Length: 250
Ligand code: SF4
Image (tube, rainbow, N blue to C red; front, side):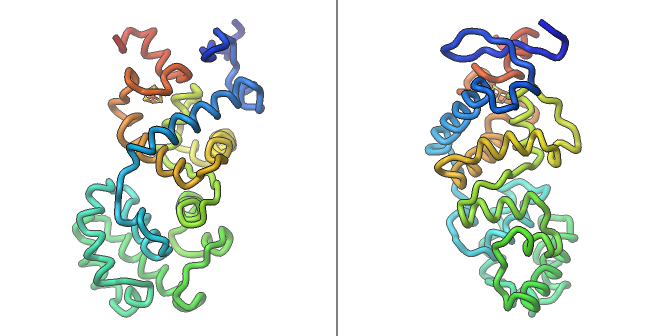
């Protein structure tokens, strides 16, 4: 085997050698991995996607409020205050009317008061420039305060079912582990990760795939305690093989 190559078990085809970079060039093996991941995660999601209030709405305001709250805060914690917040502030206009100080005190339980400031500035722009309606267009979205690639992709994917590459710390971790690619602070902006995510999410149900991989990362392929032994992707996962060889999985 040449340096930089690794052996990847190709289910049903025996063992093949795969250099990660070569593998990413849309070869047959790469596509078989993509199909396997799509199939398994969509199947997993059918039973395991978590039911949060911001996932049962087509209202862009409600989704963006959740995305802002979810930055660096777990979904279960956000859920505790989300409904009450939406009740008090049902749209961008009500956020502007409430003012920054009131928002800060409402979001205090989550800590990180910068999120209150961010939501306020965003609401001011949405009301001022777009009449209170969030523009569902990547270029326009990304001009708004606090909206980067991840939030724009998450909004377009969850509201419009558009297969946008949704890369955050968690989805990058899953991709890096399966494909054996080192994850660094810049991986979320890496073309390699973007391509893999784009290929994976480009399926019949992009929204469902997005929710599946987010929840899979949060509950199965977790940062500290991945449930590799029972994971349905372990036969194609590079990280699983490494752990197995190191005797960390019995
Ligand atoms: S086998 Fe382990 S590391 Fe690989 S995808 Fe599954 S949980 Fe994650």
